Image (cartoon, rainbow, N blue to C red; front, side, top):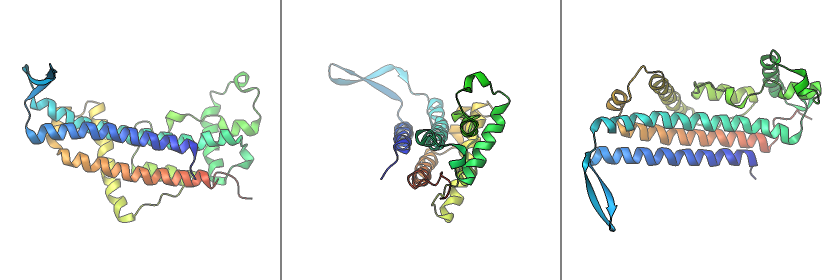
Length: 237
C-alpha cells in the first residue's frame, strides 16, 4: 500500500539522487584520471578539442558543488514530505477538531504566524475550523536554508511521525548533515570559495555523504508514508 503524495516525494528523491550521482561520478573521473582534455564527436569519431585544457581549479569547483547538490536533495525531499501531510489534510477535507493533538499544535503555530497578515475577504468562504487548519501554512517556509538531521528529527516529532533508523548510524548522519549544511551556507554566503572547498574535500567523502543522505531520507520518507497510510494525523477515535 502506498500514498500518492509520498509517491511524488519518492520520485523527487530518486531524481535528485541521479543528479548527484552524475555530477560526482564525473568529478571523480576527472580527478582519478587526471584528464586534461575534452573530446567532441566528429564524423562518428572522437576528436580531441585542442583549444581547451581542463583547469584543475575547475575540477575543485565541481567537487565543492557537490555540497550544494546534496543539500538541495535534503531540503527538497523534506519540504515535499512535510507538504504531503498538508496535502493529505486537504484531500480528506479535515477540520481542526478532526486532527491529532500533535497536528493541532502544528496548525495552531501556523495560524498564529499567519494571523497578522490575514485578510478576511480572501478567506470569507472558510469556517473558523478550516482557517485553523490552513491559515499561515507555507510550503517553502519549513527550513529556510537550515535543514539538518536534528531539524528533521524535531519536525517529524512535532507531527507525531516515527523515523526508524539505527541509533549508531544516526550519530554519523547528524555529524555529516551538519557539515553539509555548514559548507552549503559558507559557499552560498561567500564565506568560502568553491575552489578552496573542493581542495579541502576528498571526492570520496562527498560520495559517502550522498549515499548516507539517500539512505536516511529513504527511511524518513518511509516514516511519513506509514504515518499517512495509518492516518495518524487524525484524532483518535
